[in-house]
Structures are given as C-alpha cells and as structure tokens.
Length: 185
Image (tube, rainbow, N blue to C red; front, side):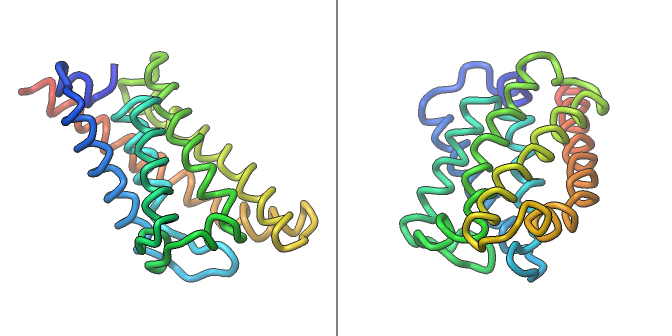
C-alpha cells in the first residue's frame, strides 16, 4: 500500500486528477532548481519523481509523469531552465525525460510489492529506478550527440551518481516520515 492509498483510501477520479496535477507541478518546480551543466543539467526532478513513485504507486506515478511530458510538449515551461516544447523531448536530455515515466512506474511498482515501509526498503525502492534511469539517459545522449558509450557515461552518468544516492536517501526519509505522521494521526 502506498502512502496516498493509506491517507486517501476512497480516492475518486477527481482526487486522482488533483494528485496528477500536483505531482506534475512538483516535477516542474523541481526542474527549475537547476545547476547548468552541459549537455544535461543537474536538477531536483529525480527527487520529486522518487517521492511521487514512493507515495502514488506505479500507475498513478506513471500517469503523472506522462502528464508532465505532455505539459512540456505543449510548450509549457516545465522542463529545466523553464524550457518547453518538443525540442527537449528529442534532444540530449530526451532519454532522461522519457525515462522519467519508467522511473516513476518502477518506483511505484517496488512500493506496491512490499518496499513501502521503513527507511531501508524505501531507499532501495528509490535508488534502483534512479540508477536505471541512466540507461535511457546515456543511450539517448549517445545517439543524439554521436558520442561513444564511454563518453555518454562520462557526460550523463558519472556526474550524477552521488546525487542519485543522496536523492534516494532524502526521498526515503521524507516518505518514512510521512508514514510516521500518518500512523500518529
């Protein structure tokens, strides 16, 4: 069971729509906390996506990220550095952007399979999908920029590994704290 399922056991379609909108807004805001790096900026998006996956579950988390991508594709400035449109979805960051959907789904799926409580379980559920995100991220960067696999890893993986661990720790702490607050209520 996810935290939102426990907190909102009788969710309506309207409630789910609000959760999707809130989640996509959180990802959009986290994209603006950006350290400019080339070709992939360092943002807080993966932290937000991990929290969404840990609290929403697989389907709702994936739908939330699909909504985020749709908002960006429509030109809303939701991607890093207030960008939007189709170009980011086809450029060097495309693998990460599209991979966000899989990351959110897998994080939620792991939670639904028992990694839903306790810091260590939540950490694993947040870290594994975060590390797997590097696969489509580096692959797309390699194709778009014509880089070798080693060059793609150096540009799109190595600078972000420590951040992936730190973000998984923070997300696990936040969600574990959410469960503690929920139990006290």
